[in-house]
Image (cartoon, rainbow, N blue to C red; front, side):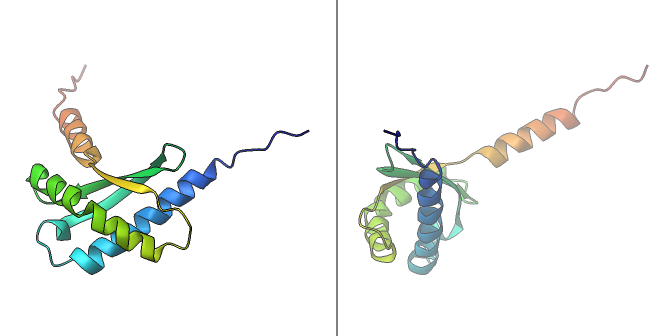
Length: 120
């Protein structure tokens, strides 16, 4: 009896679909909100056997705590809207997490630019 192969791309596909739909929801429903309007979703990862999707975001708003609080506050209504837009039986829970990749890359660039390269 052959062992059933697990489709490893399934989690990636679900995460990508959730990311796209949630980005549309944020744009369509919360686009006029001054806090949420500046949020860009930059990645998504499915966890827990596809039970939830972690959505990574970046915001031009410097008050990260306010952005995170607002996203946490609207998560339930975003998930409700997500369920209406998804064409599958089960809708994963979603969580928003700030992605500081751009800031870390800028710090590395700054450090590299400030290195004193000696001329021998």
